[in-house]
Length: 284
Image 1 (cartoon, rainbow, N blue to C red):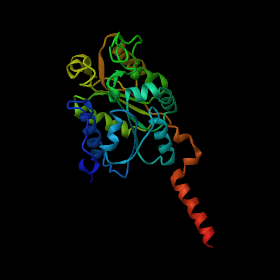
Image 2: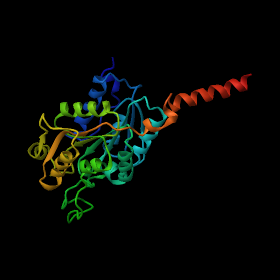
Image 3: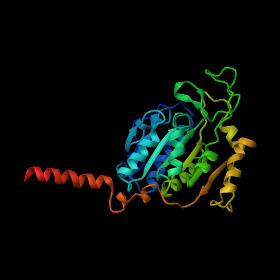
Image 4: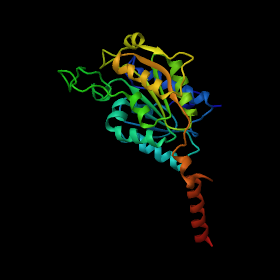
């Protein structure tokens, strides 16, 4: 049985109070509670403060290019579809630079779990506005306030074909753990949008802000109702209310399910067999 220490790398260098701390311990705890170990899960990191977890989390992992974590995660899943694949990204990384990859990963229902650190800023490069920043947000790059309206990641995922869409808040680590566990267990594309305060560069979307503007979905909420999920998701845009929980979950054939090449074994095992045949033929 693995432990949190087994998944721990270097000591994190995030700012004191950063929401990344809560997300980091939640990811490790979820892995442990799911019975995973560092050699049984693949993790792909984007660029940014969230991507720095590449040094702090011990697992099979790669640090992708900015905005390119999802295609790397998809490639890993195609190579070995029996291994859980998790992408840990930021809102700028995933919804900005990687927005096109996000859309197509949703519509393909690729069996990966995407954990997004959503703090509204590019924290690693000193707080420029990210795609989820509220209209009027002032930063070094937008001193007069951002002109565009924010992306609604939940509504975007829902309308593009994601089969598991959840939202949680870094200030409630136990809830983050549960959402991550459910996302990994789900077979299909899973989005877990984590509302993550940046205590250094975002003085608007603070812990107090999210505690006042978020709420947990009721126990009787029906997760397979697309219309209701969209209604809840759009509250983030229309009333500045942030629903927490699994907004939507249905079962649909994954991308890998529809590939005949993967019906009997993984591409990884096939390659190993071919490598053995080549070595054997050279030997004899």
